Image (tube, rainbow, N blue to C red; front, top):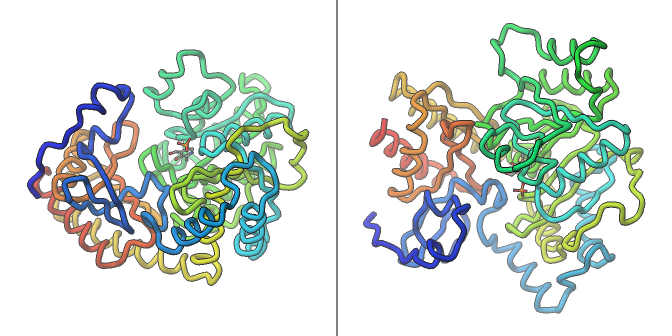
Length: 422
Ligand SMILES: Cc1ncc(COP(=O)(O)O)c(C=O)c1O
């Protein structure tokens, strides 16, 4: 594709240096539909990024758009703090009937502020309040958000340094497969918990992602997650699963922990819960943990009513009949097949490919290669992100509604980008 130089001047002169995605994709996007974005010069891009996991049902999904337009046109409540509204009622009813009840999950639903980090902050605060302890255990290469509490349980040193103050009350432990694959899981962690001389303050909770998205698509085994849940139970620590990126069907099941058969004490949900890219977050917890005082944790944008409308429409459309999980697992196999072929075509270039459902990563042995591939893919009309501590993993996160033909098309572009760079 021939790329004319877009007019980026106002972004470069007015917008902060902190901007990031626009640097890797130097064009001005204008419209989007399904898995394709179009820039202001009319070039289209196939999207294997999906708003960092916020657009599991694609851009401007027509069913959700219709529900939103109808709601806005009838002057439905847009802003309502945490007042009871018809939109919130419809969402809670759908969430209970379609998601919680069939899975036998007893959770109460809290609406923190609308971002993922807001949900993580609420989860950490509640765990500390319930247990009366300060310390939280997180895992190597974890990512939980940019606010100070969430950053304290995040691994990335560059992001941590941005805090400007000490990040305290968080202790990292090795994630699944972080060590040599020989050391028994949780040997170190349990030893510290049991040794009065270890220096580890007894944690209130452990926070974990079942698949680390930003950390490099590190997939925890179901056995490892089950052992972690058992350890939390034995040691009287709450288990928080951060399902902000991997929930809402990304790994197949609605919640990413379902495959392991565990029931976390607290679950954070955001990104794709609104289904439309509108900000919305939930913090779910077992009813006996619901010891909040009214208003003890609040926020102006808790009840994002337009997001409730699209969220309810997404659940009703995609999750009522149990088909979504099968479809995602099937489409994941298409991705896996292509990645296997790419790795076989370039011996030595890739350490591994790995993933679950429709989240996949291709780990490059040369740490610079992933960014080169992503850059070339953009030139060829494909949006892909990188992740991992040194951005060494090419990350594939297509919308769950991406058709098999679009997956083939995008993966062929990826294969060509790899050929051009490896
Ligand atoms: C697992 C996880 N937790 C928390 C967050 C933070 O969400 P937000 O950027 O909406 O604050 C993210 C964002 O990528 C995430 O992937």
